[in-house]
Amino acid sequence: MKQKYSLELVEQHPSVNFYSIKLDEQELTELERFFEKFPIGCEYDRDIDVIIAWLDKIGETGALERHFKYEGKYGDGVMAIPIEIGNKVRLYCLRLSDSVLIFGNGDVKDVERWQDSPTLSSYVKMLMDTSRFIASRMNNGDIILVDKEIIGNLKFSRDEKK
Image 1 (cartoon, helix red, strand yellow):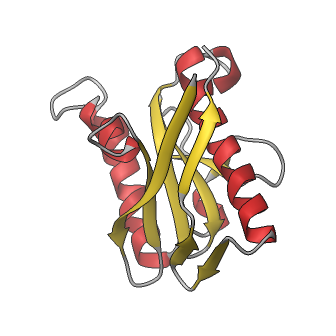
Image 2 (tube, one colour):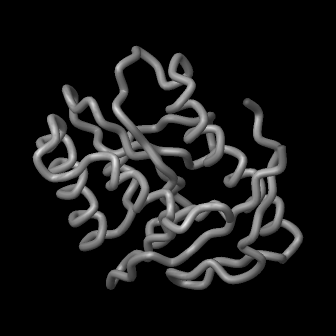
């Protein structure tokens, strides 16, 4: 099944812009869908507070590499927030530069590796595909990064494996 999606600007900060994946069939971006899973008062409040604190810090300082945990394959830019040990919730993102960050989705990490969870692996693999698509389009000039903006064709289509 073909999965169609695009990238949407969700927040602008002085040193970084936050984008998020938005599936064509969904009303909300993946970042919004992530936060909807964890309403205030849920058992993961502390974990979500840590993630929000990291998002605030990244908004202030930029998407510096040291703020993230590597999750994908070498060089694809797929990262996770937070880097704290003991946090059970992961939010996955794609770091294009210090000033451009693309959010996917995330969930409770109740396995040793994200590859062992069908839910988490689907989120990470979507970001890995997106990284590959963006790199290809940047190589042929269909996407360019200008300061904090991604300019060009931000609509994507991928074969979703069930």
